[in-house]
Structure formats: C-alpha cells, structure tokens
Length: 168
Image (cartoon, rainbow, N blue to C red):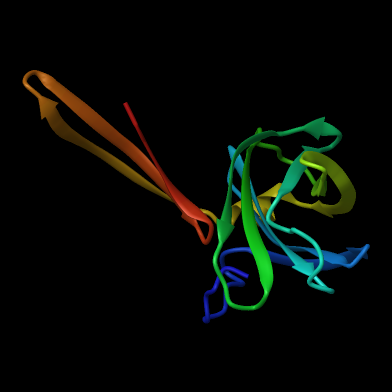
C-alpha cells in the first residue's frame, strides 16, 4: 500500500483484512506504533466505480479507550483504490492490547454529506512487537536560531509511515 517495493516486514505488521459492503471494499493493510503513536494504513476500492471513496473517516481505540486522531493523509497510487494513513496519539503499554479500528464512508445526497457505512476491524497485538518496527535515534544537538537562542534537537523516531523529530 505504501508504494515500497522492498520487503517491509522489519518496519510494519501486515494486517490485510478486507470488508466489502454496498460495492465498496475497505482493507486494513498495515499497522505500526511507537510509545506515543499508532499508524494505520488502509485502502478503499470502489468495486463498481459508482461511489465517491475520497471522503472517509477513521477512528481507533485500544482496550476500549478512544485514541485522538493526530492527522490523516492520502497516498497516491495507480491501482484504482484510494490509500490512506492515519496517525493516532496513544499511551505506552506493556501488555497485549485489543486494537479496534473503524473506517467510515460517506455519500453526498442532494448536497448533504451523510455517513454511508462503517467498517469495523479488531485484532490483538503485543505493543512491543508493533513498537519494535519504530526506530529511535538520540540526537542531542543544539542549533543556533537567533542571537542568544538555540534549539535543542533531542531525538528522532521513524518507521515506514513517517518521521518525528523532537526538540525544545
């Protein structure tokens, strides 16, 4: 889904479950995590080319607790499906957890956007396994930004979905 030709087993966990309703197939493709974030990659395919699959929503919960969506973005491809990644904020855990992902589609009826269908996925995973796919680098480098001011880059975290650089 992410357009990477080499094997990605070392970075993410492939889920690859698909639910079909009313001519739309929604696939939960891959999941990755670190101690603060959960990334979810999913795709929508219009089986009959009769639906607008560009509008969707995504929600996630871990052990029944809803996660805050930080951002969601589309990925370009040439397969006829729409691919998306959603990044959620989460807390670190030290035990196996139940992950619940809900992806919703919408329809445009007479200028009104209404929810059409909800696609629910759930799986149990050890957070340490998901976190193992996110690499951390301790940077601790100061960068001068103005007279008498510096910015401290403290760490970088990355996985197949993105990179986060922290500092103060």
